[in-house]
Amino acid sequence: MSPLDSQQQQGEVLDDAREPLSSPSASPRAARVVVDKAQGPLLASSEEQTTLSVKTKRYVNESADDGPLGSWFRKHRMHVIVFTYSGKPVYTRYGSPDGVSAFCGALAAIVSKFGQFYQMSGGASDDSLRCITTSGGTRFVFLDRTPLWLVAICKGRTAGNKKQAPLPVVPLAQLRSMLNAVYRQLITVLTSRVETMLLERPSYDVRALLGGTESVLANIIRWSERDVITLCEDLSCFEPLPLHRETRDKLINTLLGLRPNGSLTPHCFAAMILGGHRVAAMVSGASKLLKPCDMPTFINLTIASGSLRSGSCWSPVCLPAGLDRELFVYSYVQRLCGDVFIVFLCASPDQDAFYSCQRAADHVSRMLTPVGIVNEVQAASDAAPISIANDPALLQTLGDQPLESRRYTPAPEGIKILEKVIHVAMYLPASSQLFSSKVDYNVDGISRGHLVKEIHTRYAQCVEVMRSREKTSGRMAARHSMLLPQQVCLCTTYECFLVWWTEDFHMYLTVPRGTPTSVITHAYQWVKSAEDFIFLDTQMPIWDGGSGVGGGTDNSASSGF
Image (cartoon, one colour):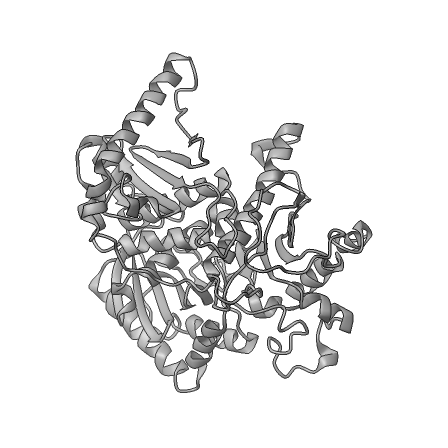
């Protein structure tokens, strides 16, 4: 019996409730696993929900009401603050660093005092304060990255307005994963040399080195709040752009042809074409220096930095997983059209490398723009994320392919079931690729951000149940890895959230309550049938010859993804 067949024996519906969606004035929700009887509907407008947008507005004109004691500061639900061991602020999501300097000093004193308590009690020498929860439900989650402290301050169940139910409490693991993403983004911009500098000069003001990159840090926080990225192991994932196989092959072949025709320097070890924050095509040198856990922060730096979005740019960037955490590599980014960018990564800062990348980018533009390929990528980026509910039979994703030749064509009842899917996501650990569909659940007048945060917080709650169950049962395997497969279904009054983890895939699914369990099988088959459209090949295409950074000609080797 296959894993999918076993789903059919769990019952005809995810649970027996068949309540209709209520008005936005639903009662508040009390989060608990399995069934939440007090939960109101998930609410959102019809806007797109996962296209990564860039917010560059900085709230620095609130000096009269700035800092944690001001009403302006307190009205935000999620804060992220970075400060040094000496209490000097480095970054704050809202407000100005000067406005929270006294608050950072208080936080530094608290964590220092707790560290002394741990040592006095004979605890582990590297133990540190991790979380404080107030009586009102506000959580202070700390991440120690010597000599930096990162803290997330998240309020309890709160609603943006009276029409929408309160958001559930964010799990600790999700907050810590978000802080880890912020830390990696800092290292991507500054390298780990900033840590050495702060250890030698604790009073050094790091803000001077971050000039102009506040929007990059703000964007990685927003991305972490609204995407499955924080649930992927070690943040090792990237999202391909859904694209026809023929178009993707043309992009890859164009990139592969740059090295043999002499357009590209041998110091270049990776190249990619981005549609927004999604990867349309990517090739690598045999040295495989671009690692999955560097992808989210590098892509965010590329698309969120205003200077990198204005034409072309040559900029230093640190890839701590693929290279030394103290070294920079250099990225060349050129806009081809709208949100379509071509990116080259080089190990050499030489002037010749810059001009080589510039010539290669111009060559790609000349090859792809006249034949409409760049416009196709832009159209795919505008259409992303795609909807599973509105395209259950792959009518759009497979183009003109005859119906009888499709690998998966659901029966009429299967189409009706797939139309109920609110959201589905699939993560492939072997290739570190992530697919996340459009959220098809709209109520006029309610913010889309509320809905997206709700769904991903519920997924995180399911994952937290998985991990806690493994720890309490004593079944945690070696190196703290989870025993798979596992499934957790969290049911609220109006929706069901399923997280299904196996060795080969992690599946996340949201449907209205009362949907037949066969939706799990149909959603899985839909994703599998559309793999060529929504995912890149498992093995990244490799350039012939050495990469200029370690050399090597093993074209059969995997890219490391």
